[in-house]
Length: 399
Length: 209
Ligand code: SF4
Image (cartoon, rainbow over the protein chains, first blue to last red):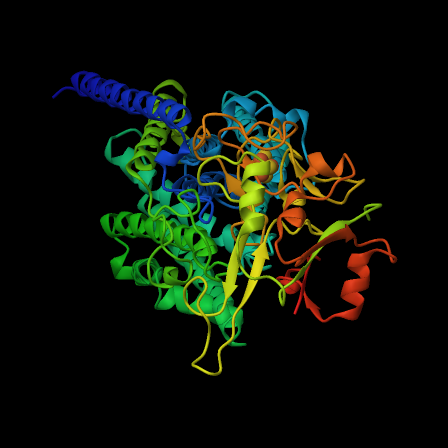
């Protein structure tokens, strides 16, 4: 094949992918409309497990958005050598993930038509309000940052201004994860969430999943011939992935020990995670994390394909953790005396609170999966459009 | 601090677990199908109305549970739009259906299991006409609701319906900030508990034990 036919066939493939993604997103919007008109009863969320798959995905995508921004801004701030020319693609991935995180909050709202109340009647003491503010800021700063990077490449704007902007973006990225953690971590109602560690822990999980996602995307783009990237940069990122993963596990261990050691309320939580209803997610996370550590730290294992596999496992491990956190928060009721329970209380209507300990309090309904897939379609659409329309290719000199 | 802090004292030695208050609440507030604001918990065996222990060492008492109208509520801080808020004049934790965006942050924030209720669909009713007080705000789909401390009655100087409905006089209503009030008198004389005191919410429902 000649160079030009290769190019046209690639762009044709891209076009098809964009159309498919748009279709999936459109179906998602249809399902969302259905959820709003036919009611949230079609989800499996109920009074005693009032958040579900959407908020799991919200946490997950806020985390995924971290990698790109931090990878591209941190080296600039500290004047260190970066990870090659991937920074623009990385920031774009970051922006897409942030948009998805916001979308997941939106589909979780009972009254999205009232979303303007957030601005008109903002209650500044609410961690959710804080998060909406920092997420909006983060989104704006990411876009401005990308724009500034692109301008600088064309020789406009100053490098110093970009460095200042990088610093702001970096701080904002760290804040986004911390404040997202506070939505949960400041609620004394849920023993699993109410820990000062939750903020830093969200940052470490975000770094793990965010970096892993960037790795997957850039290797895929390299394969597709969109950009070139030296192997040493992949190895460098894999090492960082391992470090972040180790920190994340370390936090988990600290938290489990602090919860479990007094043998009081926290011990039930440790039991719920390690042997109870959430054990499958807990142990999957642990096993996946250990595999990731091996790939990241054993030099002979750091081949491109293994690094990509490990990255995918890291993203999944963090998903498992988000599931544990969210469902685990609702799994153990604070007051479990037998009483009258009706349909709106529990999706398995009629089951008693005390019998919950063995089975999961919440399993998503098909509608919830459908809407999540729709939102993911929107994400794919954004990602592909960005790659197609924005000049995100690395400038020749920084491969 | 609110000028007044209306609250309840519930005598668990008197409560017989008849659910009359629960039913009266459901009717007074025209609650839709499946929604309960006031429920009776059994502190005893594994199922409702059963006792703990083996004969003759049995024990059982009832814990009627409503929104605790906490002096330091967790929900009002958490709501991003102030749709749930502390009423200054009565100390009741109120809920504005027209403001609520249905994010359910308050449900995550409230430590008292099952007190807050979301309308997961368009409210449906067992009867085809509205019951209860005409001043009760209309129930809405996709918003959170809960016990209002019968705010519509408080504003007329009346007590919540669950107080009138209790067949054994187990429920007493009054202002916890007024040292001469009967509720203050009761909790100064009798031994009482509050639910989940370790969460620091300082609930306004006291249980005499
Ligand atoms: S569900 Fe309604 S009342 Fe509860 S926090 Fe959200 S907006 Fe506020």
